[in-house]
Length: 283
Image (cartoon, rainbow, N blue to C red; front, side, top):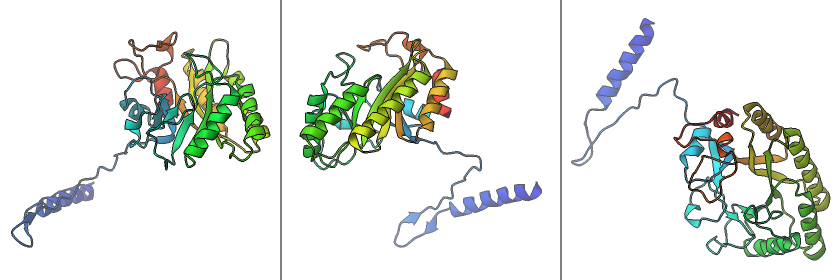
């Protein structure tokens, strides 16, 4: 113990001596400081695979749960310098402000198998054409295709059949986006079975083992045990690489407010984590 106290005092004395002004070349003076590093200090940890579908513009929510990426259902080109941001082409059209040599990820389409306001409502044949146009215009971009809601296996099958038939020279997608919500009538097991089946269909019709992003998911029951099981499913699938939780916090002025929002958001309106948020933070 005495030795430890002595070492601490010695470090402080050295820091004080070195922080005094010392002569330098010319008439300028420089000061040297030695930082004191705390042994128990733990720098913030961010998981680059964990994300948030950012409903409200609260980037601090990423820090609260240790999330390393986010998106906002659009290509907001003012955010492109933020390496955490992934742009979305909601209807599969090419954002003019996206650089021609852009080589990052782009979420291509949003729930094309769903009608407005829940999704883009793009038929597979049109989706294949827009995918082809996008690949030709931004060949280095990595497209995460579909971001489709549950029970969309047939959309992906028809999309890939169209690519195989009419665009055989266009590279098949490597990345796909799935959505999925645990509801009172949809269990974790049912959702995971659909994800597994759809991944299998994609491999069958494309010949490529896909990488899947779960770009929207939640447990709307608010049950933390069920939600923890859902995260375990995502973690156990090797083909799932990234995921983004919906939502981040309640916004009473939002145009679209899901039913019983309070039960499954990550962050309370006062900025504190909900029980669901606490689970997401540590998993």
